[in-house]
Amino acid sequence: MRQPQVMNLETIDRVGVVGAGTMGSGIAQVAATHGYDVVVRDIEAEFVERGLETIEDSLGRLGEKGALPDDPDSIRDRIEGTTDLETLADCDIVVEAAVENLEIKKDVFADLDEITGDEAVLATNTSTLSITSIAAATDRPEQVVGLHYMNPVPIMEGVEIVVGEKTDAEVVSLAHEFAEDMGKTTWEADDKPGFVTNRILMPWINEGIRAYDEGVASREDIDAGMELGTNVPMGPLTLADHIGLDVCLHASETLFEELGDRYKPAYLLKRKVEADELGKKTGNGFYEYD
Ligand SMILES: NC(=O)c1ccc[n+]([C@@H]2O[C@H](COP(=O)([O-])OP(=O)(O)OC[C@H]3O[C@@H](n4cnc5c(N)ncnc54)[C@H](O)[C@@H]3O)[C@@H](O)[C@H]2O)c1
Image 1 (spheres, helix red, strand yellow):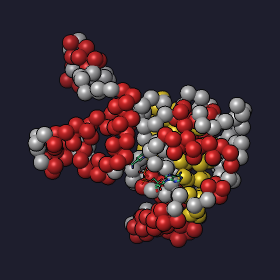
Image 2: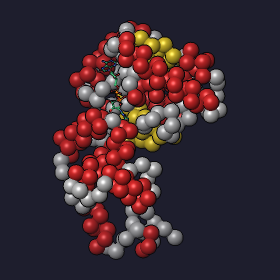
Image 3: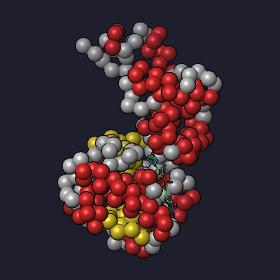
């Protein structure tokens, strides 16, 4: 195993992005917006082109709203598209956002491990797959970390930093700093299935889908019920559509395989109710209140 090099944000100039789909194009755009030189790679030229068009459209819209620190053309000029993975060889950090398939991600990481410099950080945007498993395809598992951006990347503020079994603490710090440098706010999760977000989100989405299928309410009323009743900005069916149903299915299958039936009331929930810890009204639940 290699020894991790000293890394800090100042050493990161060139950012590689693998995959020019929904997430990869967003990550490339946000990195370029914050001054990084970006190279984004997909397997087919038409996918690269589509990703770049998405970026141009989004930059155009944000530019019109005055929401960019620079003019859209200058930001766009910082992004290079390619089908050749070798173009990522001199990247200081690579964020992988290819399809949610462990074998594909492992192949990508093995290739990145071969071609990038020793000190490069390799990050994955996986929604549910194990960082540790992906890192095992490399000879630098301590430099592999989860950088889980949210969709749509240019709009969503949060990035979940996922710590693999062997991820070095310096790499974790760098991941936080890198995301924050892109104007994001981070939180950290251990490398457990679904991390924080999808572990909780996916059963919620699936329940919304089942409720619709079982005729509990119309699509609109399920979404309205959750939006108006629980103050989320988007109900489960609309959100699933935004995420991509295939992405949701992949994520759900991984969680089901790893965690089984998650729909029983949580053990701790029952215990807290028995202990009369009912939340804000009793002054304590999962938090304490004055
Ligand atoms: N869509 C979301 O809401 C969301 C949110 C957070 C994380 N993610 C995760 O981000 C990743 C990408 O998801 P997406 O929604 O952008 O998917 P997508 O299908 O929109 O894009 C994936 C892209 O990866 C490309 N690709 C496949 N194999 C490749 C390879 N070997 N090298 C380079 N490119 C390759 C595909 O051609 C495609 O363009 C997945 O791991 C997903 O779980 C998705």
